[in-house]
Image (cartoon, rainbow, N blue to C red; front, side, top):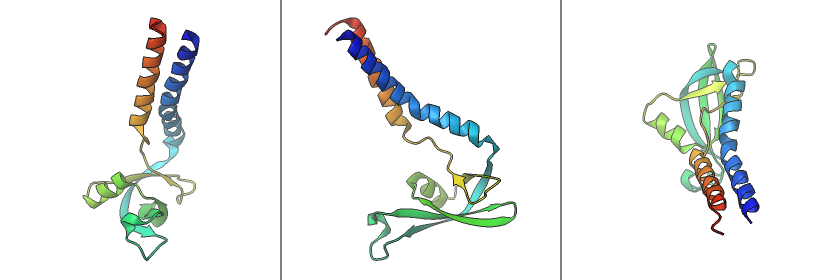
Length: 133
């Protein structure tokens, strides 16, 4: 039982580390991408009969400039990104210099879930090593 709990704890810890590793690899891969300031954000939805807050397919039309050309892309709605734009704080996107219509937001998704997974995995490993089972 001790070995099984230790292995389970290690798997849970590695599941918690996975988002951080993926973010680090994407950051290294995206170093050649350029940071562009967002000029406008418009909320869009494919369903015109419902308010935006209740629509199932919430998206944003984001406009930005790259090398004196204006581009706009439709991306999934991100509440934090939209609220920071509405409050007049600077919003930036990563833009691929070879294909400027390809963008990515600079954020780590769900860091708290990853930390919780790592804590639970550490607790399971500690419990298995104490031999209380």
